[in-house]
Image 1 (tube, rainbow, N blue to C red):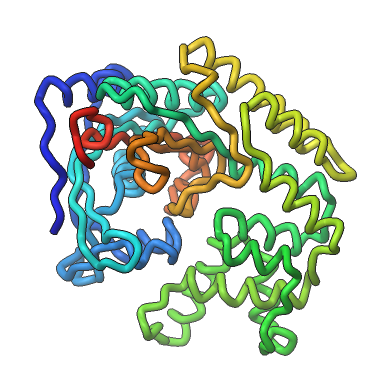
Image 2 (cartoon, rainbow, N blue to C red):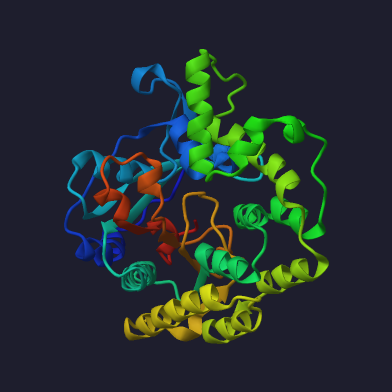
Length: 382
């Protein structure tokens, strides 16, 4: 297993400080996490990056925690406190990308906040903390990449597409292969969806609801899935295929509009203007999202995040599938975009997906960030 280089204690203290000041309440979570749950929450695309092990609770498949967000959210829900901010610090584990198969062990520090506060304010505060924490490591080549899953959703809503086509297009965001298929108008492979009432029913549900229905049907029939495929993965595949039948495809003009949106990247205020000009027949959903972005950028400036270091990229997404709103990464020119120094975003829907009892938790917003100290430290080689 590849280990990060250690960094001086004083450097680590400086990197910790902005985050620890935001939340004096620290939290520890188990290193072993349920493999199936992590895949259901983060997405099947993460499977190749997870370090699977045996010995989870009840003998179920487990993995070494690849990140802290899902684990902290579970602990928060178990506490039944309704809202809270948590500072965490500990090792995370992932398999290195690009097929090397090598496991990486690295230190993460971060914040997860579950509060019903104004989301734009919380977003700006989280970014400002992550920026200060990353900058405390001494690097002078940092930049901030901003994006928003919900902004793309608002843009799609402005196009007034058929409902199922809009749902399918939103699901393709941050999945280049799926988006390519949508934009190029590739037909779905021959499938039984035209004859399958179940597939068509699942296609009209949100992804997590479709997975729950499929899992309940398996339980009633006494069926165990084989081949390591999870309910969420199988349901998503059925939904994707059957929606091709229900919704058709983008017209050439619509595909060009989506391509133009995804190509927007630049200084944030200028990028917002370009996105506004791309609005479809009903600009109201997009105007609301753009107003929130203007307020968020104003707050970031007040919190002294340097505007000249910011880029708003309309196509920017993160590999963890639970993010459903604002996103960001702090990057170092020396390390490249594949190795962010800090990252985070909004994931309001995660608590509901974890089957929170009661309504209060479902209404609580959720936003967080992580910093990798070994990358933030200017004297490090990571």
